[in-house]
Image (cartoon, rainbow, N blue to C red; front, side, top):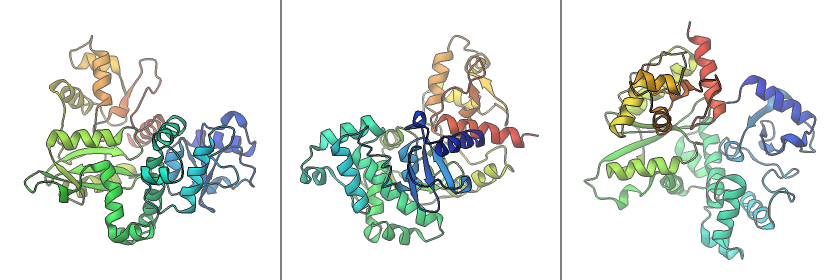
Length: 350
């Protein structure tokens, strides 16, 4: 979630149709369900009806669809005819499970489409179509509808389509795996900062990441391969535990997590992560100070890399590490979320 000041800044840019902000953010309009670029010629919504996003994928996963007037993903000055056509086709049938052969049937080269989407939007065309469909499903779930009903509404027949989309992140479906392989459960958790993916077995939590984190698919695939495990949608005791703890954390009533964790990394990475756990709620520390605290004052860069490899967002608080000059620095879930988390903890640390 963006800071309130930044949201207000974006809203002023929206009112002024400021071209300098074109491409830096998107606005979702809750009354219409569409998302627009800042320069959209449509009548401007009230501030309370706006949700602001840094990327188009964030808007899609929040269940907004592209505006037909300003075409936030297909503006002729920014993208090719190929992209315009494919985006239009997805909107004409958002429930379709798009594959490369569908792109070829439209007369386009799938590799060209993949490359152009990746360059322009930071995701492939198939990932865009999948995000659009998952956004539809997540909207139904957030409205309180059963998951099965949300699957069907979004075009996932008998739940299998939803399972297919999930397996794009999780890897092979369990039916294709040997019965003796370890089984991990994965759940989508809602939060004020967007959906979170949690993965656990029956005893410990292995992964907790924002769904929109770049490279999440690779993280999950590495987890699956290193454990030689099948990962399926489901629920387990650690998942129920972290769901309740996150709810309390975002309410400001929980400052230390108790859900059992499984740290999957090198000995050095585990040392870094355990040191992160020692940073008090509401406090911050520089990368250099963290290295010193570990007794590795010359390993600042290695410490920073280990922070970036953390797969347990929020719980292992790498968001509390900032630059020596006070700047926020990077964050796998996005700098806006890092800023929000620090402000949230500062508010409740007394």
